[in-house]
Image (cartoon, rainbow, N blue to C red; front, side, top):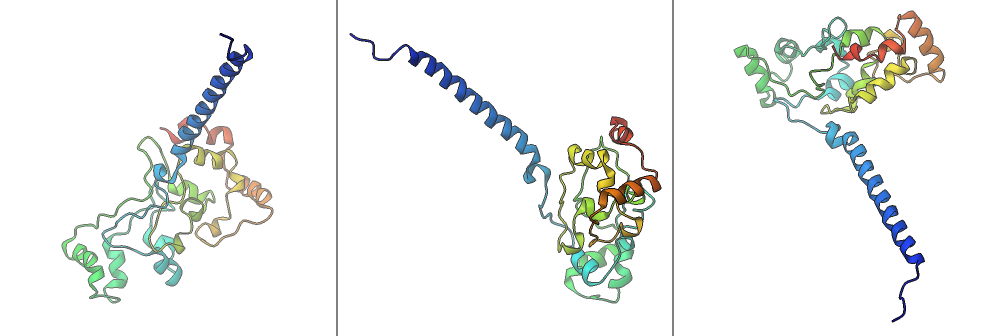
Length: 220
């Protein structure tokens, strides 16, 4: 019986197996690379249930309340600080004082038991992050948290992964702004951002990328 396939078919078969293996390896690599960057993995754009569905859009954009009115320690502490119930009651003892929607706030005020808010931006315990350093070096709230003033319910907008932090630490001049604009949610970087950023970097005594990207800077 004659040979069905030519000898060259063997080379073609081996090449097809190798090619298929490469395709599978690339696809697997893409999946493994993509999953840690997915919104599901990083918990971005996910609305979380809160004891009171507090609207930043209403309080910040509509009422013009500054970030620092509630997050009082953001300029001086590693934590931005969560407002005590008293801060809420400064207004809501007079405004919407009987609405059912704010009953958890009134109960907290009466009992002295703090409201247990669900954390949105939650870094791992092995990461050291200081809000005051970033604020005083010209990093805007919006840079990390997104347009909170446009969020009826706050969600995480940035991945908070190390590569995201490192991108800024390698070249802070591309991201920093004048301190007077740190709390301006609508701030737009100028066309000559790098030039302005380099001047601010010098003025604010921001260290070089060799220090900012050192492991011990964020992992202590």
